[in-house]
Length: 188
Image 1 (tube, rainbow, N blue to C red):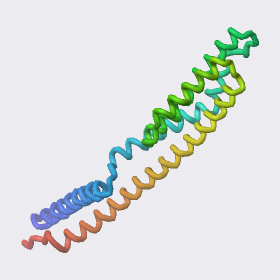
Image 2 (spheres, one colour):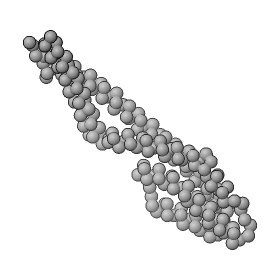
Image 3 (cartoon, rainbow, N blue to C red):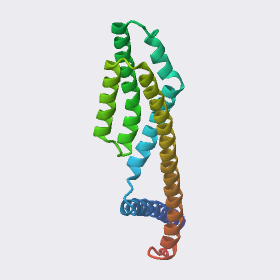
Image 4 (cartoon, rainbow, N blue to C red):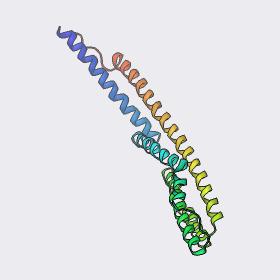
């Protein structure tokens, strides 16, 4: 009875040891490739959240915010105030695209400042047509950002699945290697 029990324990030790070895190999291989698996996993959940936020903005949040401003006044002091509020809303909505650019390391502070200055200039001139054109541009940028986020998420998810499959393949290979190679069975 003792030899069969030690044999079972030995098999369990080989399984655990081969799993740990495979995990270490995956870690080192991913590190050599410049990939942080934990960071990528966290980024997938962040991209999911960002994609949902962008889609919510595109699908109605922007229109709801614009309707909240009310009717467009025709008298100039009120029209200028309306334009300033509209420019503020456009700036806040465009922050989502800038957030996506920050996440993908393509954020340009100068470009963001130029957009803000352009919105201020348009609101000072009470140019509603240009502000609404700018709003349409922001909507298109948001749709593009949602597509970029979805594509990045797909790439990271495929990469995660590939490493999981690679882990199990390595685990089996290392287990077979340990069964036949370095660790030999003890004969009783």
